[in-house]
Structure formats: structure tokens, C-alpha cells
Length: 116
Image 1: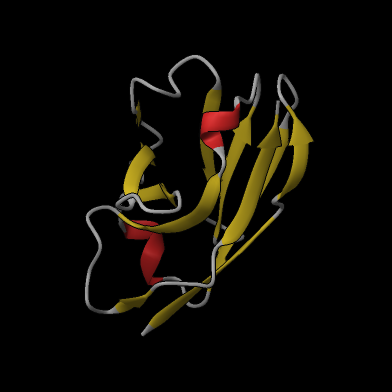
Image 2: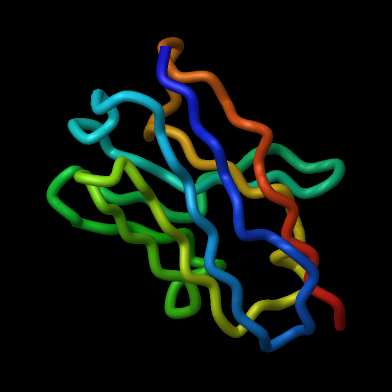
């Protein structure tokens, strides 16, 4: 199974920026579409950004124009650059394949807290 480790979260004021990183064990993920997900307290986990193996991207309407997903297949890394952060972006952020598969374990996620 592939394991994923997210990092880069923290506490930031509204309007600020953060860059999240995700490292995957093994090279299998480079052939898969990857996504960043988030889960806020009391809400379901949602996909906010996705990137194909070739680099095509898609974003949820709520983050379009503010978040940028990228990947480095050589380093087995996926990134999420977040800018113009809003309090409603507060959540635990996870990376995973899109859609999630049984052969990939969810990581611990990284907490992003945006203060108003």
C-alpha cells in the first residue's frame, strides 16, 4: 500500500498564504490523478483540487483562483499553494489519489486554521 504524509499547515490570518506538501511512498502514485481534500469539523471530506499525471488541474469553485495544485513525479510530491485564505478554508487537509482507492492509506492530514 502507498502511504501519504502531508505537511505545511498552520495558523494564518485571513488573506494570508500557506503551501502544503504531500510525499507518497513508492512510485505507483505518479500514474494516478492526485487530489487535495479537506474536512472541516462537522462536515464531510471534500475534494478541493486535483491534478492528472500530465498536469491538468481542476478546482472546486470555492477555491478557484486562490489555490494552485502541482506535482513533482520524480520526487513523489504533490503541493497545494493556498493564497487569499478565508476562515471557511479552516480544515484538515489531506492528499490522496482521485478518486480514493483501497490501496492508498489516508494520511494524518495537516491542520489549516485561518483566523478572521
